[in-house]
Length: 387
Ligand code: HEM
Image 1 (tube, protein in one colour):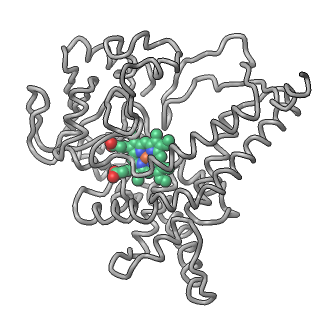
Image 2 (cartoon, helix red, strand yellow):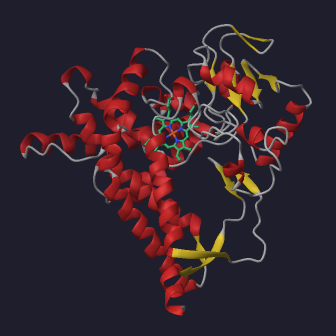
Image 3 (cartoon, helix red, strand yellow):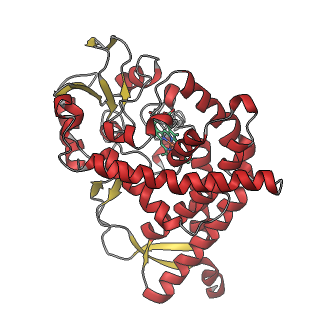
């Protein structure tokens, strides 16, 4: 679904009234989409929408045993506790600082090289490569020979779970595999079990044989858990394979929620089993919420009477979601983005390579610029020499 669809859905929602709640259904799937902070809060913050709808493809790819898709029972709570105390704790985030700096320097070197060799910098590729090595090393503690292959596997996994599948909405068709999605899922999950499973086994061996208790990475954190908290090998593979994600969720899908019991949102009765989504795109482009929403004016955040918190308490802008299932990696994500952005701005002056920067959007795994940004940079030390 492209951003045109977001826009159409947003317009439709506006015509539906103040709480901007829209209901749709397809086969056995019932769906509500909120395009207003008020109804978004009711969906994201209470305990009524605490599960994720899970598609057959995600089940086959072991996502059900990972934090993001596990139903909100005992196992999910156990994973969230492990994540908060051991994987995303302030200590772990600061231990990963050296890695963040190294990747920032590598990206800056890459920017300089591209400018010198081609006279233009295609930033997206550089950021994607940096994000991949950053996440692989945060998870496994070292760069891997198979880094690129793993990156492609993660990408394929996300493509498979976002692919539209008739069988998810018409269970009677479940035995069919119209688009070969099930076949591809089986193939991919056995590859993941093989590769990630082998890394886990090798690390376990090195813990026992050379008493290497590991470093600051997530795998070391999982292996060092007290006995009563430890995960089985297959759950460990499922958790690490989720965590390898490199793409923030799309603006509309913004990680759907499932109603676990009958509930009212605004005046609307929502039966249990309904999927709920928040159209964050519509909220951030709504002129009754944001002044001149189409104008790129970051200083608007300095001018707001009150601070706009992006951590989930203010649903005019909630890039990490909100409520029980809010992103557990938000502090790590922010620390990384802030450092990388600061490093790139500090090292270079940035100029658009084209006269006009085309801000058209396209929805892939996340919302991207249709025509990737191409820039020219001037190293800031050159500015100093010029003085
Ligand atoms: C700037 C970067 C990031 C953004 C914008 C982002 C955004 C999000 C959003 C919107 C959700 C859904 C929240 C909801 O349903 O209310 C989410 C969930 C999640 N994120 Fe992030 N995230 C980021 C970084 C990370 C990182 C670095 C990790 C791990 C290494 C991570 C792991 C997760 C997990 C496991 C969930 C599922 C939580 C659950 O269902 O209990 N995220 N993220």
